[in-house]
Length: 333
Length: 263
Image 1 (cartoon, rainbow over the protein chains, first blue to last red):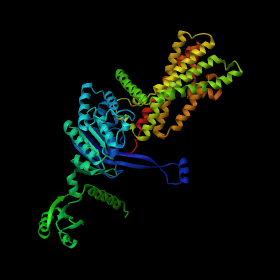
Image 2 (image 1 turned 90 degrees about the horizontal axis):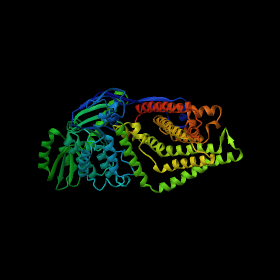
Image 3 (image 1 turned 135 degrees about the vertical axis):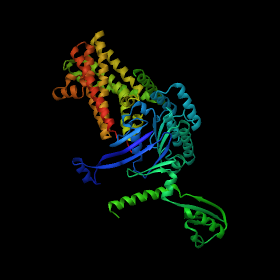
Image 4 (image 1 turned 90 degrees about the vertical axis):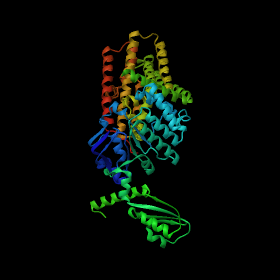
């Protein structure tokens, strides 16, 4: 469905040091530097796959997404989406894709969302009967009945985002590009969006690429992740395997009936946190069973769970690794 | 193809109409503003013609026709061209032009038809009112052929104004803030209230070839008076088409260089 080979996107940006003198000098003599937003990445995505793009801010995720959507022209490399070259922006291609950006909106501000839907129906040339069916479905699944008749400016952020999603799906796209679709939403609304996106993917077999800072989004939606760091692809595979690789340790959470000293916990594993009634230990995967038996034998445990480290932490570690590696390569401490 | 775009235009017009209805008070303020501007446009004319019967070969009644065309075109500019294209500048700055470029329809068409201010039609009516008054002052009526020619020139003038705006907006892809350019353009357009023969030398050349104000207001007024040579009519039609073609090329080049705003 999507194939990317050696994609590069470099920008020339105007650079000047701070201060009035430098500002005046830059009026006459401008110096430029090249920013390598994306610096040679390749991957393939099969039809119906759900893939998460992960990476720190400025890693090149959004740039890649925009190249795939045809908004930005690649500096180098070959990109195909369902047989189309995105930068040509052919109508047939544009009718197959959609892009939702959590920080930007396409809804007409002064009019109810229903008017934007109608406008998109006309632009995408959706037959009336299909439009009605899609709209009914979207209204039902996203619970929009009371919203689509109110002027957009009177809707809350979460309500607006649901309508944004609906507006982008009126033409039943087969490829969904979602750039931070849940940013700023409360936990319940995030969950609603996730459930809906997943059900759309399952129902229509749509391919989905998501970027998000909320690891819960990625964990709930994307069996596969592509990690981009400083414009380079640093991992492509399952989320589970990534966690295994970065942090092979598991966390054993113990609920305790009576207080214990740190000294009694230390031999069991690395103590991550310890408060009255609860202790979290970090142990290597192979040692999990042994640790559990020893804990049950030596402590009064009322409840016990084994978890992976929080994704945010895993990602933090991964990005820090990348930074350290780059620093080492450049020979700076 | 044409049918599809006419349908799209209809939908965009409907959305603009609905937006205009959301703010009904605008109707009154726009109407009052438009009338006030017409009178300020007339003031210098009244002062100048108070002293002499004609300027650069134009009598008061004839010059009124030029002001009429100026008012009418101002209505077209502010009602149908300005709002959409000012919106583009905003789109480029905020990065929401992404959504326009993702639509399976011509981006120039979509941005040019996204917003209309129907209340500005008052200017068009005021312009027509000025024509009637001017001819009553002149004591005669225009010929059918003259009216037809001025109708054609209305189309070429609108096309010219639109093309100039597209060129201005294309600059927004490079400099991002074009507020100054739009002000500059609006103030230059102000010179179109005078018959073109008032300007001499460099200014005459500038207003004919660079920013063809002469074509926009003086030609249609002359056509109504039945004294526009047919070569000028053909020249205006061809000239406006060249302008539109250049504007289209520049626009296409500009969106090729669009870098989008970061999220």
